[in-house]
Amino acid sequence: MSLLSDLINLNLSETTEKVIAEYIWIGGSGLDLRSKARTLPGPVSDPSKLPKWNYDGSSTGQAPGEDSEVILYPQAIFKDPFRRGNNILVMCDAYTPAGEPIPTNKRHGAAKIFSNSDVVKEEPWYGIEQEYTLLQKDIQWPLGWPVGGFPGPQGPYYCGIGADKAFGRDIVDSHYKACLYAGINVSGINGEVMPGQWEFQVGPSVGISAADEIWVARYILERITEIAGAVVSFDPKPIQGDWNGAGAHTNYSTKSMRNDGGYEIIKQAIEKLSKKHKEHIAAYGEGNERRLTGKHETADINTFLWGVANRGASIRVGRDTEKAGKGYFEDRRPASNMDPYVVTSMIAETTILWKP
Image 1 (cartoon, one colour):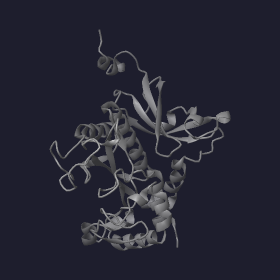
Image 2: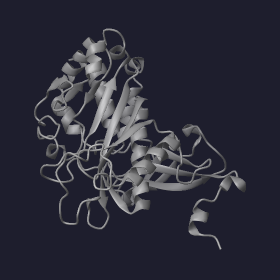
Image 3: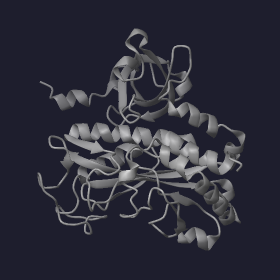
Image 4: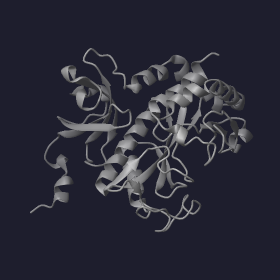
């Protein structure tokens, strides 16, 4: 008799050319990922060759019950680390039957900005540092924390090792390898300052692909925590008090910034960002005011500061960039629950397209 694990790991390619495509989309809250699977007659590597599909938008908070059909447009393909073989994960965005993007479809607006010829010419690169917190499923309290109590103060946990400092490494390492398998450009992982909190980095990735990769990496993380019986939280301040919040620091450069003389272009871009601080903050994640207090390696939410090697600033420029006179900068304002389509495209729009 087969074990359940044997059946889950069945190699379909031994008996059929058919493959399973898991269509992924973002639900009505703007953070809830949804997915469903369909069978394809054979392998597909180009999203334009995939069929559009539909779902019941009234069940995801995206359409009324009397007109509930929402259409999924396949946009990016990744290898499926769960089913493996030729099976795929498909990142989609959502439209009405008439072909209009639904209000929660932030990818459509981002694609417009990233397809602008001035933006294409600048080849914007992004490196996104996605922080998150692992919670115990039944009590919604961080992994490794005593039930109803607190661990020792912050200090030993950042990049820490040992059973009393690193909680959930099996989940984190599984996620790291699964993302690399899927074709996501994950550049690293580390334990964060608050125990039970971790970070993975995606990039450098060009344009909208950075946001596609973050969303699929989040999906894979949700699936792995589902298997492990844990919960992943992207709340920017999961535990109140003297504990670090969770952000999604966004590293950014354009071709002009990476070329000789780029430091002057970086300073001009930061000047533009300072003038649109309020607009960016409003779009950088729900509950960010609980995180951006001016403590715990952040600038105050109402203050725009930039500096070299300053982790208490809104924008940090690295010492290596200052020394080389070219490179990139880090926007430290986005919250862990930010929409990467919104944040990446907004940075490009403000720094490249906006003419004050």
